[in-house]
Length: 388
Ligand SMILES: NC(=O)c1ccc[n+]([C@@H]2O[C@H](COP(=O)([O-])OP(=O)(O)OC[C@H]3O[C@@H](n4cnc5c(N)ncnc54)[C@H](O)[C@@H]3O)[C@@H](O)[C@H]2O)c1
Image (cartoon, rainbow, N blue to C red):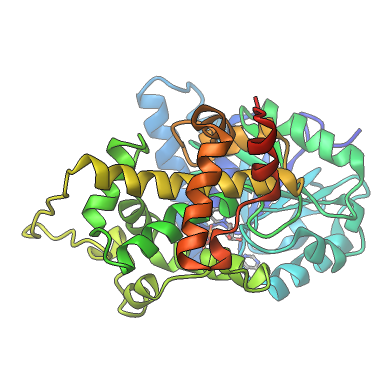
């Protein structure tokens, strides 16, 4: 049987994701081998894990900090992974480097080992194609921080053996995660469907309809999102958020819906990466000026409706193109990015005809392909159907 509870887990890449995934696997009772080519990365990862387990023990959340840390081996050679039942790769986001790693891993693993990639944006199929066992390769996309975020997108490559999909899903459930199945398409579920939250907010700002603080205020106060788009982009970091947008845009053959923004490109070029550098769209220094959002209800409503309509359209189109099921789309957006409600439910609540009208008005105003409504949204509006 594949992916039994007792298998040894290999993790390659001891950065923030690899360390987080190793923690999750250890806490689920597995022994873990964590491999990285960088000695510093291994040292940092070891210190981070020890500190995390100590703190969890002090808080009374675990009793076995010493056992957990003694159940992981840190290594800089992939040969040490030869006895693993599952190896999760979390190295640098470069296709050639990942392909080369998978090719090497296939030479040393046993004949039941499953090879998974935590890539955010690369095709699982192209990673699988590089190794001798493409049928045993799958995507397991954890969210940051992996120990705290419940969602895991399980992404079969077109070569993946069907039994592995089911086994991976079951293993993630045992690890206390919420797995959803996503088709191997750019951005999978979350990184595709969430694009308009950033892109449309930037567009509204660039057109001078509202300033950033007002757009953020509209999305938190009217839309009930935990963070506004500009605050969230600063939090994620523009080096990460802009690169994901750019990759999704390129992977969709430059579909206007995913077009990156110059406003964001400029802050990235300036090195204003967001909260981590003390400056992004906002200034995080102690003496920074406070922003006062405009509070006219009509303006806030227009902003929120426009962004939410674009998000709903993206989710509906992902459903139409069979990227995921209704249930998995709803779970992904509520657990992966903490949206206040699923976008298909939101469509039902507003009415598909209402959402369609918002999009068609935008399309008629701008004459841009970006605002084209999904065929499925149009069908739902015509037949007055609900998704849930
Ligand atoms: N950071 C996030 O928010 C996030 C979320 C989901 C998925 N991901 C994906 O997870 C992966 C890792 O991201 P991260 O943020 O942890 O990166 P990171 O830069 O923190 O860590 C990557 C680690 O991989 C090591 N490494 C690079 N090439 C290697 C190789 N050939 N063999 C062994 N080790 C190697 C590096 O030394 C580094 O320690 C990427 O594919 C990324 O797209 C990241």
